[in-house]
Length: 119
Image (cartoon, rainbow, N blue to C red; front, side, top):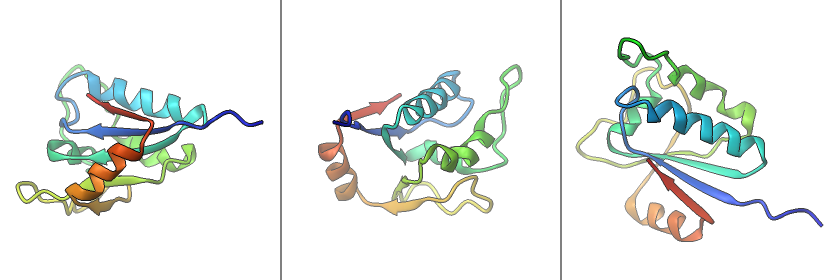
């Protein structure tokens, strides 16, 4: 019998390089995917700036947002953006492909997912 594959919803709501937690969050995403968990990423509010390939970074912090381009190698292909009227969600050069969702879809995802993780 195969072990139960947990579904994990990860909500990203902070700008990259705002804190060191952004890189730690990406490491968690990759580690969870390596153990065959079904990962869904939702970028909300300022978190959508992770999708820009040319995101400004803070001095002393190594760039990591380009690693989002490799998510497909970890079988993470469910990347979503919560529709927000306050932030433009059409980056000129997105680092990864995404699908736009609304609040109702996000609420359903939260209910249907085994684990919801938000930093």
